Amino acid sequence: MQNFSRSGLAKGEQEDPLGVNGFAPKAARMRKMVWDCEIEYNSQKHASSCQYDHSPPSERPTLGQNLYFTEQLTLGVALAASQDLHAITDYVWRAEQVAWLVSLYGRPKKQHLE
Image (cartoon, rainbow, N blue to C red; front, side, top):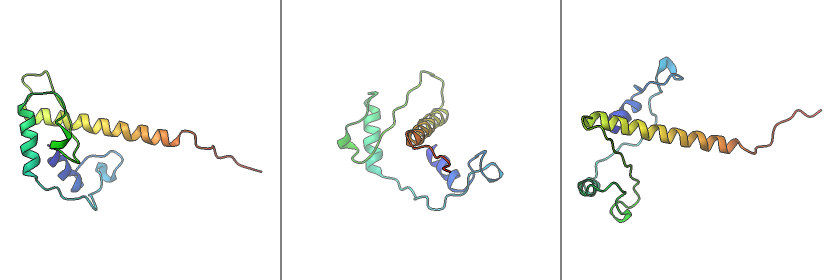
């Protein structure tokens, strides 16, 4: 799901109400992703352990990790992935908003001097 969304963003196919014609611009310098079989192996190994906790950092050096669960038993894989992506996007967006607001806090107010 993330690859699909990322691809759409790179092609300028993601909706953005503030963008030209309602879409975000095409990515100019988005790095290409490559598949890593070792990461896949370690991720699957941890998922198969059924522990709702992050895997040890030694199994994923320099990598972050997102945890997601749902209590909806009939939720399909694609919908679950989509909900997870939206949750991550909302979290990152809110974090960026907070960082921006904090950066504005305490700035001296500009005043017109005569």
